[in-house]
Length: 164
Image (tube, rainbow, N blue to C red; front, side):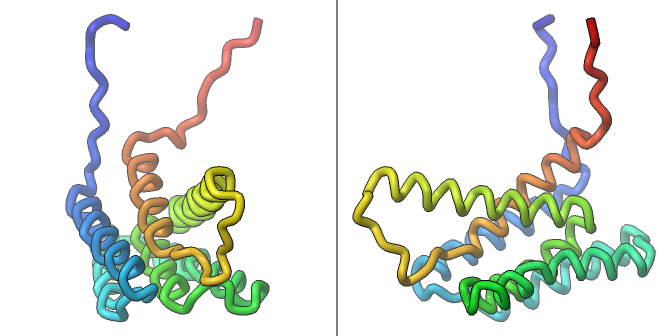
């Protein structure tokens, strides 16, 4: 290193603050009641729609983002209720907030975080059962936060790999 520091500038500071507050609400609610409040989903939708409008996103991008956010609905149908309705209602505004590509990344990261958590829990306690399910809401919001940082740090730019 040459002694300089690298700073990741998140140009969407209010979005990050909103997502952190949403993470707190969803985490506390999921741990206490195993439900995501409708008010949190509605607030997330209003914030996501406002960001989409102020960012001057074309209607096609907004529609594609909403379709990406509906992926948990398909998963709910395939798993016979393995994903709760609160998770489905929360995924759409998170995808709208991030856009189609980073919304998809956020969903994939949420799945990876959830699977790693369950896998680690199974390793630490082999007798653990997950009959009550896994609270997926906090993973959704955490995946969205990580995707927001990826978007802000421009990691999605092509990387030049030197070839010998």
